[in-house]
Image 1 (tube, one colour):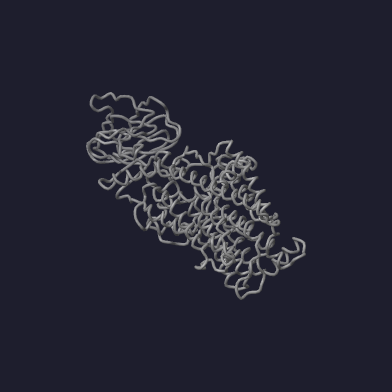
Image 2: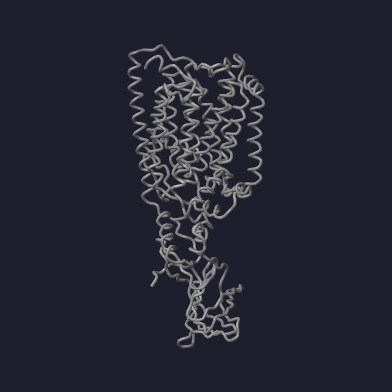
Length: 621
């Protein structure tokens, strides 16, 4: 490398430095590799809820600020509102939204690194770590997760970039934009509040040292915060106001009262998930809940990963002498992340929730910054052109250069990079294969979309299969919600109605069959039970129902009218249509008797069968 090429420049867009073209190539390569799998995916889980909530609604403040699960995410809600306007289940638009956000985040990462260290070849290492880390993989493919995670990654890079620029230039505009970038992240994901932790470490441990050399750490921190009081006060107001609103208005849907598994979760999240991911793992995935897959690195691979990581850390120390300060950027963020997951999802799902890498996706930008401080920050960085203020101080220089060891260091570093790239490629391709090959939600919903184009589907509002929408998402797994984007003119799902259908496991229309407690055969030939305005008690046999059930009344009516059904201590009213029909209603509670009467004089019913119990699909005739 020539001396000119090695000299840092101030602009991340400097067209004369070949590292800029290389960085652009890395960003485009990431979009191509991951985008190829993304466009083959589809909506899942919360995605469908977002589309339903956006249907036909104005973009009001109450809509934007309504909590979703445990998230306050007006930015993501606004984006789902725009995507829903494109059409029915517009996956192409959703995928484009993720790709655009990811392109902005990758570009912002490069801009941050160049603002800190200048345009250098070494900046490509932390950029590549962010772009290709498996930590960000699972959150990228699932739209609902990407709406949280990718914007907060973009927020991190922008806040650090603008914060550093403000410290270096003193321009008020840069400080205002830094606060605005933080607010952007807060509008998308609650973990944006953690951005201030590495930002504080960077400011105090680097800029504070430059501004106030020789002082004790606490005195240096106080002096730095006092010197930039307005900016830090703005950060405090933004974060404090957000947290106050969040704690008051957003309920925690996963609080169980169980003991918080801090140590068990830390073991799963850090040792079993983070360790292999830092080296391109986990290489194998557990897809017990397709299309989602979680880290499933074998035990030997976990142990080997940590041995290799230890060797890498020793190598970085010997080569770059980074000191302890980069760890101060990462560790507080990681500790708080573990605590948040332990008190959230882990309290409901157990320590295995730590195998889900999307809970660490927002750590990838922090690791990128820390790696930059190790391998690039040791070199002196000149202030921005025209400014003589503080600049990022260099870390202690490495030992005297020895050509004999340098060759082995270079070869070892190149081999490690190639191994990481290969490992990351294996993990990414295998995960994309899980996400695109076995996608029951897509097949099921698209089958219903096709059926509803030729006929109006009138259905029981019975949950769809758990592989399509998990049962834990109730009531979002009901057809009335899953297919709301199609409108009731195409799919109408109800708790009660006449001659309703049901969807089978593949999404095809079928006939409902209720099994459980069934009425005994009636005394009248070709009629069963003759019912008029006087209640008729129906003796029931079979499995008695205690909780949730469907009731099916198969009848032949002389004319239109209405009927009253007494189920246990409940009275239900249903319509009667002339001819042979079935009427269904959903209910709950114990059932020990059933009686029926008509409500209109002159209306006669012949009851063939009354059933109370669970409903299933039988093939349509």
